[in-house]
Picture 1 (cartoon, one colour):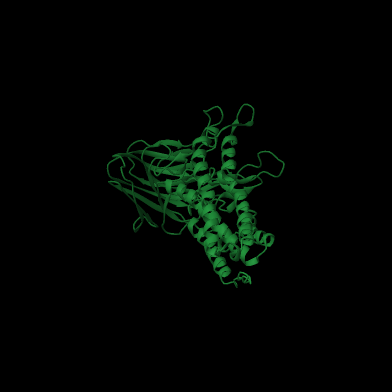
Picture 2: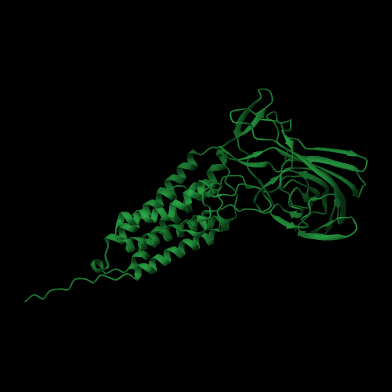
Length: 467
């Protein structure tokens, strides 16, 4: 009930706004946050890039030499100041530039790309989530090639333009006969941990290309996904494209990758923490005040009763809160991070299993310590202390080796190797996968319960004979 009340209260009261810069007043104006861009698989994605392209009908190949990539990064402002100093030369690690085949220029449309990156070598990426590593070289020049054969896209690289190495293949089912093919550049923001949480600072990348084939046909420039100022006309951080003979220079801002922004839906289950405290108190009291010799119950029966009740206490509220929040929050400018239905099922069933495992651990510890207050204190410390320390950025490894690992079952977001981010418990990420984290908690509960069954059992007092 606590989980249900807290979740529905958050859904009813939550609002979110995003800032846009007003060129006239030189101030930031808040407005409702837009819905996330969805990729081919329904996942939230970032799809902002500078794209120099032309149509390709049917099969074909594009080849280019990347001669350089430079960039700029905006530095954080000094404390108590305004916008801060101007950008300085530099590239973020996942700044990227190369060749792309894309199903049109709409954000979220299927694509495949072969690229150079600032610090991660050559990569073949497609449909935002898929990433294949090529050579680890970050030097220039580097030749890139992208070939379409039906729905199959093949990316290759070369150090001299003569000897080619295949980096990877991508299968884009349902790719139309006519696609857009060309050069691109993009640069995700520089991620820092600010006073109010993760912050992304402006960063851009500029790549220079030559020896582009084919050379036929006009090339069109599109600043896909560029953010507009409040006037709806002026780009906030525009990309750029210039051509001088055989040399193409493309400047891009943004990223083509999975999105790690957004509100993880499990935050609507925050009331579960208070509910877990109540379960710990009830379960330990149940263990320390109901004796086998008095009621004829066994420890296993106690654990089964309290575990089943706690499972229902976690599952039912989660099954109500999650779909309710998904229906209500977008209208308030809060857009929970999209997930597939197996993930929502994991959150609902996993919350019930989390509650049940904590309850069984509490029963076992209560039986071992035999006193309610020490048992409540010990169980609460085991469950919550590692989690709170990890939230504070101290000892995240504790969430891999203590019962607090079980909180990972409520993780709906995924870490991507090709996306720079602050992956920490404070932003919804755990060191273990969801079911592995729950398994750690269950192992502790099973071990504690087994230990409690080995305690000497008190025998009921003998009945006296009435003469």
